[in-house]
Each structure stands twice: as C-alpha cells, then as structure tokens.
Length: 445
Image 1 (cartoon, one colour):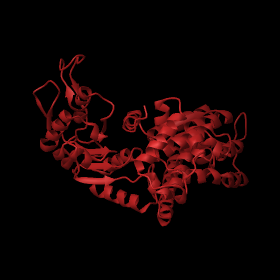
Image 2 (cartoon, rainbow, N blue to C red):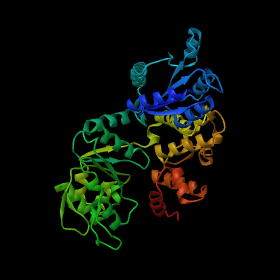
Image 3 (cartoon, rainbow, N blue to C red):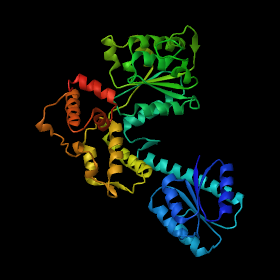
C-alpha cells in the first residue's frame, strides 16, 4: 500500500482527501503545518506528497525545498487556491511533479495518481533498461553485474515454477536465503507461505518438533498440540537453512517426507500430508559429509535435484561497489541520514578487503558506517578498524596458503578486536553458531 502525505491547513480538505485516498487503497498521512509536514515526510518516506502552497508557518515552496534536499524519491504535487503560472513553473523547476489548483474534484485526484503510477512504471522500465545495458541485474536487494551470478539468477528463474528440490550451496553470507526467497517469489506458490527452518539453532528434539510439530505430552513441556513448520508451509515452500546440521534421526524422518510427502507429528501416529516445495541451503560440503557418514547419501540426492552454488564476494569484486552504494542509500533513507556517497579512499578499502563474511558482512559494515558517519560521504573513519588496517600481502611476499588458513587467521584477528562472540559474528557476517563451530574447528577457544 502506497503512503501519501497530505500537507494542508484546511481540515475539510484533509478529511476529503483522506477518505478518497483510503477508497483508492492508499495509506494517507496528514499534516497541518509546514514544519509538521517536513518532519512527517522524513518519518514515513511517502511515495507521493500533496502539498498546499499556503501554510500557517511557512511557504509551501520552502517545504518543497526541504523535501527535495532529503533526496528521498517521491512525487510532490502542489495544491493551492492561489494559483499563478509563474508559481507553478517555479515549483516544477524546484522538483515538484505537477500542480493542481483548488478547488479540485475526487476524479482529478484519481487521474493525477494514475498519471503518477504510469510515469513511475515507465521510469522504472527505463532504469532497468539502463542497468541491463551496463550489465547489471537487479531484483530487489539482489544486485550483480557478475556473469556467474547473472547465470545463477537465470537458472533460479527457470527452476522456480517446478516442484523439484533445490540445494543452494556456498559460504555463509553469500545470499543463499535471498535466492531462496526469489525462487519462491517467482514460482506459482508465491501466494503460499515461505517458511524458514534454521537447522543450527535448535536442539535435536526441539528441531524435530519445530519441523514436524508435536502432540500434547510428546515430551516434557509439550502442554498442547502444535503444528510444525511443514504443516504451515502447505501450498508454499519450506526453506531448510544450514541443512547439514540435521541429526541422523531427523534426516531419516525428513527423507521419508521427501519420498512420500507425508509425516507424523512427534508423539503421534496420525499421518499428515502436505504439499510443500523444499529448498535447502548449506555452507558445508555435503558430499564430504556423505563420505564421512555424517549426512545420508539418499537424502543428499533427494535434496540435490537442482544445485546452485553462490560464489563468495571475493570472486565477484565488480559487485562490491554496486552493493555498497545500494545499501548506503537504503540505510541512509531508513535512518534519516544525509549521506550521499562513499569516498574514493573508502571504496579502495572495500575493494581490497577479502570479505570472509561475504555480502552479509558488507551489509553490516555499510549499516554501521551509515549510522556512525558524520559527513556527507562515507569515509575510512566510518569503517571498522580491522578493515581499515587490513593490508593485502603481495604475491612475492607470501606463500600460497589454503583458504582455511586464511580464514583461521582472519577469525582470530576479529576475535582479538571485538568484545564478544556475538559482536565478532556480526563483524564477520555469520551467525554465532557458525562462529562457534569455526572456533572449535580451528582451536581458537
């Protein structure tokens, strides 16, 4: 639902517009003074502003000037009974979309909003075409100009409308969950639920209950029947995040579901059937886990009908600037910060950093910088110290090392410069459970 801000000191006009906008399934927000209008605009970030030219505390053109200065994309329409051609031309030159003289009818408002919708749609198409000419693919927050990632998007679109299981592999923070959302959104199941099951955060019996549900008395604390996430995903998609962490018992039970599309709640004998498409993701090598008898081979084959590998950010460096600028605009808008860009020095740091936490780490760094930044551009002072102090070694000065050794050294460095595991995990762009496993693996406790 689009938000529309109406700034007018006439109570009757506010009421009339509010009723008409609600009838058009829009969300009206009102203000009766210029100062209130500017403040409300920064808070709600409306798609459209209907702005009276004559307000009790300030001129409408001054309000328009402050709205334009925020650089928040919106369509401002000046409405007034004191119309002159010069004023209208001046308002449009300052950034207004159109000009509507009072008195106006509801049909004029409807026509104006339809005109805005058409212009917005055409502008979006033009922007998309411009980006495609520059080799950029953009789907929501998923942005890339990397050839491999663009091919991944094409594959995801092709398989979206099938019922085949999809296994998304790749390091933590590469965007596996975002891709799962896109596949669901492109499918015929898009109107059904997308239910996420995080296989890392729950103990075995709790994960089993979370996934399959339970009946009253199934275990201590089960005081009532509870539907599991598989039931809630009926008609939609269930996303198994970090599926490699499933215990053997749950693997067996989930394999049965994949084979027969039926299961039983924990502690029950009643067979339940649901229609849910399965997408799984992991940052671990499932083939290796199969060889080690940690993960069932038959389940692996059932999940791995379509495999999509998400490359790490260090292998798609052409996307770093795209992503950094996109999230800077997003966080600046969300936090009402007047930050217009990223300095060349900061971008050089971002480009040279190895990004062990991948896109998730980049998002955290940009959000942190947007909140802490004191200038109109993101500077090196707004970036984490460990990133600013990072010095890439020259090839002549180092021996080739396994990725595991590089990861171990970086995790150790971040742990030394953070106050807690939770903070370190946030800096690295991974969840605390994953960091705990890596600390244990590399004996960094």
